[in-house]
Length: 593
Image (cartoon, rainbow, N blue to C red):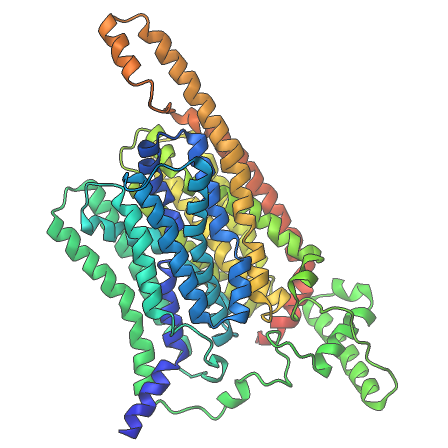
């Protein structure tokens, strides 16, 4: 009996259980990606034009990214309390929107609707912050894969909720808003006591690499399954029973990763004696710790003392010269011949506060590169409903689901491949971000040209590139600025997302769309005067509807502008790569064989 209680306690405090529960919470943290599906219902019910819908989209993006309160609460409150606050915000914000859209509550002015959308989506920042802070602390040596998988499930949330909505089979499109309000709150409240730091850095096992491989396999299977189901449902008229079966299988795939903490907690896998040597100790070099030992300080002194031409040497020779200089400084410090200088602030790779990070050029390179890259991708996500309608597609849900799946694969793949870059080659992680932004620039060109199948290829490229940002940026920020204040730093960087959306969607895309829609409405109205009286009367009946734009012209100029800005983002990312190459060589150079 005592043995069973011990195993149950080990299960509850297993870092893999925390990771799996965080994955489930994150699958509800992607409700913002459903805006392209719920915006047509809001637009028709409240008679909004595209500029007004764009303002709601910006409010949604601000809510998804302004996480100062979430970051602060996570430092002063228990993490379960922060999750509960997020769940209540989600329920109240989107619940009230649903009441307004269905006529159960009085119609509110646009600014009030923006506040409700902001509050509802701001709950996501609590889900994201708690999940990332907990799991990065539990897996400090696997930041890329952990962040990629967690952010991936957030990106996949739109497709998961869309499939569940298809099973509900409600003819009322506003019921999707109700599901967005209630579903995430229920899941988060059920799991809020599980997701927390559990000293996971001391739970290293030989099977960890196999566990990650299993998680990756489930992720790929989940994405492939969802893609197949979505295409099948779009092309074939399936019965409700078949759709229900597909949804049940989906839920089983999401639950499957629980076998990892169950097997680890209830099996008697022996601990390797060598594992203790791998566990990070306070007196060892570890960029995730706040203390600075002699070796770390010596490294800072090496940065000051080494000749600048050392950086130009080949990697092997450069490391040899740095090691020699570091050894000399260490000996001199031990003998008292030199006094180690205490730095006024931390160096990259050590722990920063938010204010210390804000004065660093590397921080702003990350910020503006993310603004241009992810901001342009978010504009596509927010306007998918109108983009698909303008090109003659009746069902926007398929593209919302597809970009959600590609977003998921981009996040998982971005974390995986960027980890290979830093672990195997000790090369700066932001180089993967530059590749993602180049891929996005090509995707925008496909949207601009409007070629046959452009919506499918465009959603593929934009989804992959946009998703990769959210695996690479948090991991890179934690490496360059430490984990001590990671929540605050991460939530500030995410402000780049709504800032980019404000520029691209709120100012550029919506203005161009409405301008083209007004031109087409004017031509149509002029044509009505040349028809018989009955047709004129019919035209007057439709004057209350907001103007719609049709054709490639609606978004072609916007897409070309965003493609150009993605190329600028590539340049910023490569500047960051150049500036941080020495830091990554120090952090990961010894891992190379």
